[in-house]
Length: 186
Length: 346
Ligand code: HEM
Ligand code: HEM
Image (cartoon, rainbow over all chains, first blue to last red; front, top):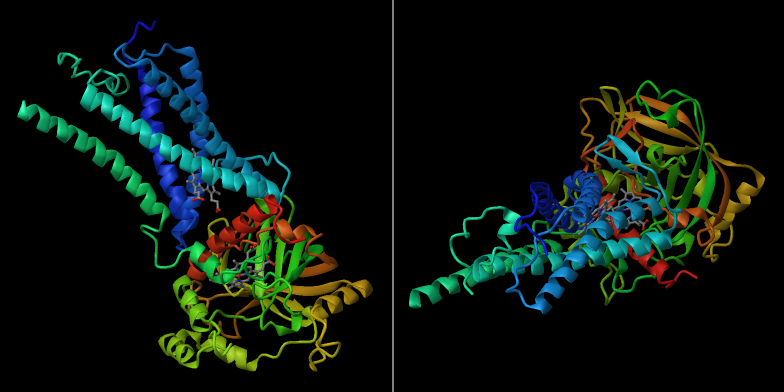
């Protein structure tokens, strides 16, 4: 049983920063692979650099998650919904790692260096192989669509808690507790 | 009560708009929202013509792999800090190919011959270039290139391009003139070893703050006898076999010649030839030692993306150059997927 109702400030900051980052990376990825314009290359190198940032943030986030207490879902949430929430959070974490890792590894398999904002270059850690690139390139796209689906469900559920049930779940991540005095509806 | 249920409806509405809106945004962007009229996928679809040769490049499908070294003489090191241009030899993997998406097309049937190089084995210092026999592009945007491909598409009835469509395209694109003049003056040589291969697009050589726009060409050291190919013209691999036979005797060598732009030249326009009096610098020699079938050679797994450049070189904003990079990536994605599923290319 958790004694807190709100995520730590660190957890909230990293949650919203990554939300913004991941949605931007998804949109940038989808747009840049089609574009013939000169901005395509700029976007691609930003995508890779921010993608690596997303991996670093995911590591920090997992460490926070494992080391800090989490608020529980309110008892009003039925057991099966609690299970689904847990499962969806597990997959969100999995995607937060699988997304940048597949990106990095596919570049490595293609023999392409991954330069992070020109500060440093990640080493190539896989054999150079077109088959491996083919696999990872498809995974990168597949996991992206999985992540998009998860994000949509996640946002829908969060808003449902915040606007319909008004049970404090949304506020546990926004930290804005103005619904406190409004008694939960049921 | 009524007020409460209407505000509940409003709140459900907000959720629907937020989630639905974001879903629509993802869907739209994935399907070309915000893109120009042609995407990389449409290009490659067109090149496949509904009948992809699985596992092969969607353009320049017919070709073979090369191994050799670029021997720099150091002449370019004042202009570029790239280590490749310091005096010394850097190994490369290369590929000679002909234009077109058919991997079994006869060598002598194609109007375009090509030399692609991936120089250097350190990933972050590598230089890739894909060069063709013409010195200029007919058009200067991906969009116009796509229109050109459509205009010259063989008519299903006659098997030849429709003359009216071609005429309409050319009338609308006067920038094709230099390419057409070159085409009219060009006769294919008897060997891949005696062709000149051009970067067409311009790039920058970079040294500190100094930036110089250049084009380059691989200029053969072997002289052409000027009578065209004289061997068995029915052999679909005529030129490939001729090239390999040459290599049995001696390496095939090209000078890598850089042409420096002046302020009068627009480096972003690949349709205009630069005047003949522009300064030229021989940066070194491309020495080809061996060649192998593409199914066995190292070149097959390489996407010769012309925007893989080492520190000391940079891309111009030439729209054709930029378009090439994304179209090559899409072609590479498709054939890599097919290799993963072990489809095609036995
Ligand atoms: C959370 C992090 C990331 C997300 C959400 C993400 C998302 C995406 C998406 C949606 C696409 C388009 C896929 C398609 O439509 O087929 C894409 C493409 C791409 N991503 Fe990522 N990505 C991430 C991290 C990375 C990283 C770390 C790298 C490399 C270091 C990377 C490299 C690429 C490349 C090179 C492409 C284009 C491949 C091509 O040209 O065919 N991504 N990404
Ligand atoms: C908008 C114009 C162009 C488009 C859409 C286009 C498209 C393509 C595609 C899809 C490939 C196959 C890439 C792969 O799967 O690895 C390719 C290969 C190639 N392209 Fe282009 N190309 C264009 C212009 C040019 C120009 C201007 C040149 C020469 C300066 C050029 C030279 C080559 C060469 C040499 C290859 C073969 C590389 C190899 O051997 O793998 N292309 N092109």
